[in-house]
Length: 237
Ligand code: PGA
Image (cartoon, rainbow, N blue to C red; front, side, top):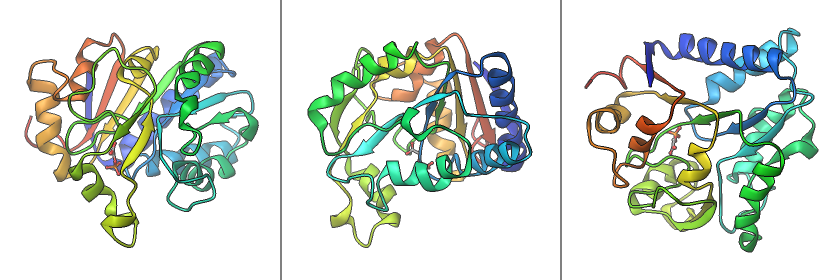
């Protein structure tokens, strides 16, 4: 695990460079994307580089980590909508090659892993972390062998995400997420944590034992992870 500590702006630039490098070597790479506040600067930077002609996504295939159960892609809090607005509509990606788990057709969850495999596996997976250590929506206690599945969201996750909804009652109770094994199968992982609220869990992830109680701790077992932390998120290391 390589740890890089810098400002959020420099992190976005450095992480974006990894995409430039990967796509110049492998233009048809398979990219695993994430939602939330954390990747927004990176997505803006990728869109800027795309406009500037320094990177093209026209041959990539993408798979997002997760989606809320019960929200279809037109709902403004669905992760499909988030990706369309914050990245896909701003870059030259082929929309037909972008995948977000279906929040409506959850019986298809297991097929998601098969689709990833059929595309050749994920070359570069982007990850954030929840305050409770989740990656994707793999909440504490999720088995490391899990593949894409439906989860019940913890109270702390629903609390953390209620800022985007009119009330906590509106926050979906379940989500469909790539499993820990799905994530760990990615050839390379870029992990980003920003802000002081993430400092305690970042410390736990790096300093505690590898345990399903801290899902992100599994990343210590992955051969190629770059961990990008801003100074606030790194403050307790
Ligand atoms: P955030 O979410 O980027 O909005 O902090 C991260 C996560 O819950 O994985």
